[in-house]
Length: 260
Length: 254
Image (cartoon, rainbow over all chains, first blue to last red; front, side, top):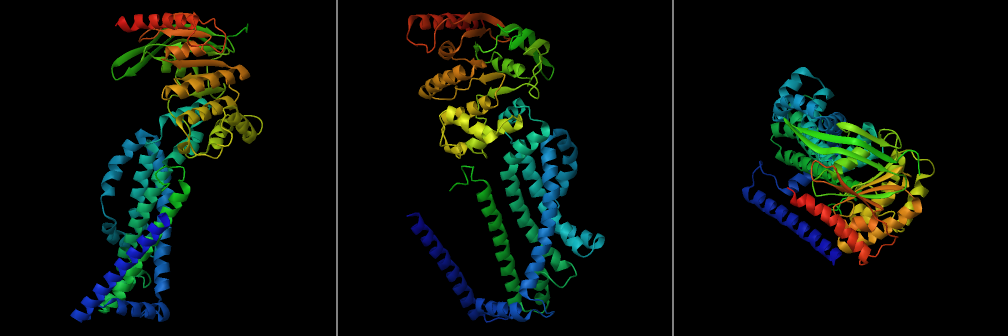
């Protein structure tokens, strides 16, 4: 039964995608405008950019790979900084109250607002890493703090009665108990980071990157490649998110919620 | 008779400070428990039973007086305690086996943690459930795992804080019997806190009745009955009534 339901779901999903593409194609035919290419034009652009590259000779593959590379560096850096700080802040309420007045307002500055500053202050890869870091840092930090604070006091007491010291309690009780929250922070952070990179590449100078691809072809009024870039961004974002979700399911099979 | 009592409390008092208020939770408790005894502590709810247990295992320090475990102030880093909490204290991300091993690893117990853990899991009747996660087993089974984890570290003292309070009556009675059989095999000192008089009379060699807060010792009752005890026998019932009377005095003396 379950399998049948899944097949049904997949079919329904495919059908709705097909309907979407058909409507898009019909509208494109009807308008017959160079500013609204149909899915077939985008598919052709996909073939073109994938094989012979864009006007600078970079293929869709190298644009994507460059964007992913930048995001992963910034995202990794965000994880390395936000998780330990979050654990520390969650464990020590005094640290939390000292850092909150600094962190809270910064948190509400959208990553895009940092772009000009990062372009002035940093160069090359550094800008992108900084921007991804800014975007990914806060979801990871806040989720880590929340996860650490949610640690059951009974589990901590239990470890204490066995004579566990504070580092053992942190590594064997607090951290694993906060891990589901940390993972969902990572998932949100990666999503935000992915969205930031595209914006950053649009403004930054380098010729490679999906954001750059979009801007280049927008300036040439070749909207088929612009839409191709957008779709690629969407699909990669989806895959990254799915990757973390799968990791979560693997890691947290001990949780009742993730079982289904 | 051991020269040094397993647990000794010398006019122990405990205050908690909340803001400006000072709350006296425990007042002048003097008590001595010999090694290998099964002692139940009963008292009106909210009287400070849990605080007493936390003082005994060094999670809390007394405001006045002295707590001694085998002659020294309790320190979980030096002493071996097996504490069983009322709440579920299993690590949800670890299997039954890993949970029992956790205590052995943290206390750096000698011997092979894996085989010791398996041995104690079998002792509490959970052979075959080693690889289950806590959410896959029942409340009673979780308690058994907690008991196995506490016993496996070869503790000097076992401290139980209303461990069966959340269980249904049937499961509770089964676990009471099992606890007694494990205790008689291992010959450990047990402090068992409960508000359930029936449970106290069924389990304890000695029963400490506490007053309402601030808790002090209202009465010490030695239950002179052979194990296994029959709940419907006249002496059992008369012990129950005696303890209930003490508690009744405390509750009505408000």
